[in-house]
Image 1 (spheres, helix red, strand yellow):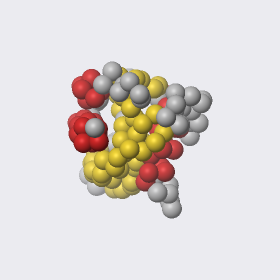
Image 2 (spheres, helix red, strand yellow):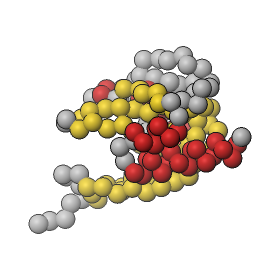
Image 3 (cartoon, rainbow, N blue to C red):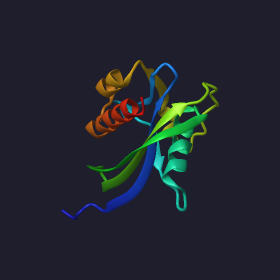
Image 4 (tube, one colour):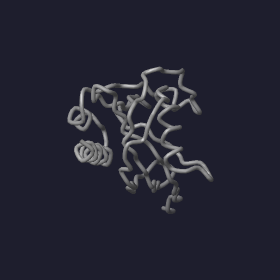
Amino acid sequence: MPEKPLIHYQAAGGVVIDPNSRVLMIERTVDGVHEIRLPKGHIEPDERPEDAACREVCEETGFCDLEIRADLGWRTVEFDRADATVVRDERYYLMALVSDRRQAPHFVSEREALFHPLWVEDFEAAERQLTFEAEKDVMRRAQTAMQTKS
């Protein structure tokens, strides 16, 4: 069996909190699989990771009035799709929602049209609900960053 092609790219996203310490995530069901994720997406050529993170959160949730509070660092995830092996370098930021004004999300793809914003009561509840362990680790980093800033 031939090896699957390797797809390697960078993505950026955020752990967004509101003034009540709720955490913003996205919920989606694709091909019958339900997931709860952190908003993130591709870093475009010549785009700074923090700009990509803000853009992606805005595109996927409609919440665009954001302020970066802390850099949560890079992490690399690897997974197999039917057609390829994917290696994704992810950069996350702790973000604060400055205002709850929401604009209609600007969906780039049909896949993103399936995203629904989900506010969860706090970091612990958010960590329990996240689908993937790598994102649970990011949530723990965000909680540590918040405690450090307090």
